[in-house]
Length: 143
Image (cartoon, rainbow, N blue to C red):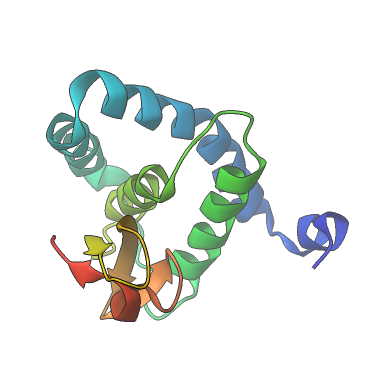
C-alpha cells in the first residue's frame, strides 16, 4: 500500500497514536540504552497503571490492531533508529494504559542454517498483534 493511501486510511485516533509513537519511540530507545530493559519495562508499567481514570472499554474492537499498525508505521518512518523491542514495549504501554491485557514476548532463534537472531513481539489472547504473524513459529520464547 502506498504511503499516501495508508495515510488516508488512518482514523483520527490512529493519527494521534502515530504522533505519540513518533515522540515516544526515541524516549523508549534512550531509556533502554541508559537504564536497561527491566527499568524501562518497570517505568512503562508504572505509567500505564497510573492511567486508571482514562481507561475505556474497548470490548471486541480492533483498537489493539489499529494501534499496532501505527506503531509499526512510526517504527518504519521514524528518523530515530528503533527495533522490534522498542515497538513492542510502546504498544504494550499503549494497550495497558487502556486496560487491555497483552503479553510482550522475546524470543531467539539459532540454527545451523541461519545466524543467531532475537525478536520481540506482542500477543493478545495468543495472537501476534505486532512483530509478525510467524514470530511464534520462528522464535523460541524466552519471555
